[in-house]
Length: 305
Image (cartoon, rainbow, N blue to C red; front, side, top):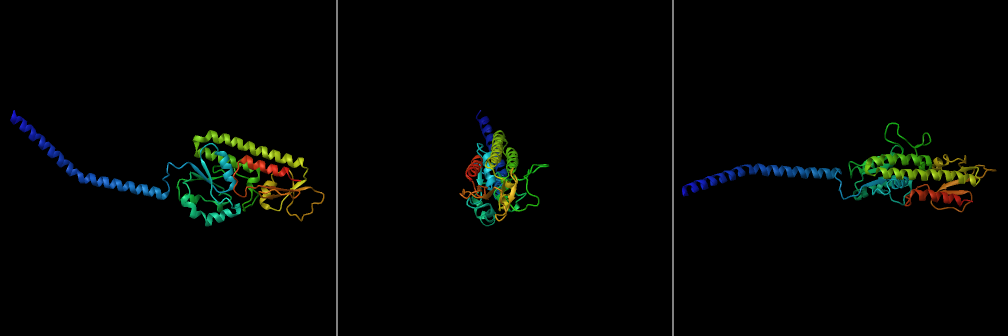
């Protein structure tokens, strides 16, 4: 019996020694594999971070806008979704200064911006105002949304005068506003499909607000007894051409004897000057809602003597 136990003990020792030797023989290979795997993961993580494809899950879903009208419409359509809507240029700048901000200021602010999921632009008609290439440095997967033309075959597009190249206030035409609402709603529903029902509800509300504004505007113009509208600001032509009254003059020196003409200018402050309607044309950032902006312009018209 003692001899048997001694044989079992010797056999166990031999197996244990053999196992240790086997582990020792594979240990260098295991260490090399672990080292290579760790290096590969480190390189991949740094590459993803450098390209901007890595998005911190703690960051809220966000959308970038460049034009005041893009911010106003996007905020209206995404209300209640939790998507953060940002206006990138300095809020004090008029639309004519946005290009300056992009060229001179944006690069210095880029590192502090979120990794936006999408950006709303009008690159099809105003390529100088595009910031997509800038934001792509932060997130290579950022989605460009053009609110002036639907990026699909036979897609909807806003209406502009033939040959028009300068950036005018095309958004002051209510028909263009409704086209842009439709384009944005369609793209937002595809980017954030989980919010599609709410986005479509917001779209319906926005269209109703714009339609109501256009009807009230035409009715008010007729009730006030104007013969036509006038403006020496060519950027306002999209709005003037959308009205039911004819355009009578483009210069205050024009002879309007016998005609009662409503002169229209762009600005935020109302004027006490007779026959002058100062329209808030969204030339600068607007903090209120779409309905607030529309209502303010109707109220300012109502005050014209």
